[in-house]
Image 1 (spheres, rainbow, N blue to C red):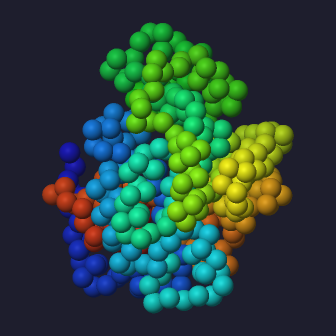
Image 2 (image 1 turned 135 degrees about the vertical axis):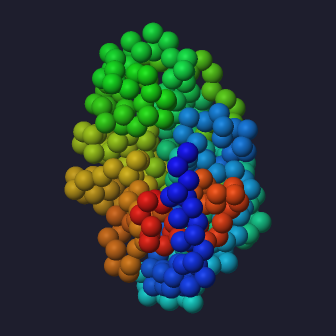
Length: 335
């Protein structure tokens, strides 16, 4: 294993932190930071999930929220974005906490931690999967595929017939990334052809009751479309349904307006932006790494994803200086 770069990173993180160069008050004052979480799972489940990089354990989430709460003016996206755009300038910069994909583990594990720290967050929900056994396409594919070391000839043949022969011997995470770039109807046909034999109980999405509970407790419920498609590959009718349909369904469920949207996979273009405006969303977040000055286009807000592996130093310990360096934007290789 190449240990040179991690050693340099750890050393740089410590030196820059001691010099105040990565201090949130110095790097982000006057800017809005939006952080992204996905799954929150105990280690025993993270090790069984096909995209481990988007998982934090409850302990890692607790540690991260503690740091963010101490270093920033923290809250749900609609509230801190509104204050930020209104010119509010607290002594600690703004950070918004967001969770994508509507997983039940957010309710089971993240919710108590947020309550412990007195923090409200935004949960982006793919509306078609609420309370259903069905999973988004990438999870269905991930749970259906065998690891590369046990890939069957049948699986290889199906991948080849659905434009993915070039990754037929790759791990599920690599196949999922490649599947984002194939034609939508081909991807859907593959998902239908290679279904998981079972879905682990810990992998389910939130129920309607859980989402309503989050809203009643003061968290923001945002839309993440209906079925989590790549929006710029949708035709006009599908695009309208994905946006208007998710907004309407969630508003009926929680009894209040839904004003925030997260683009699946971060993908959008000029046509998608027009549709988002027409659907009535007031802000939307991308996956583009970065922070947001006042006046940032409301439908193209930048975010910083949280990767627990990059918050740890070479000793395996969670490192505030490493997290500060990652969020600072000073080290592009950490993104």
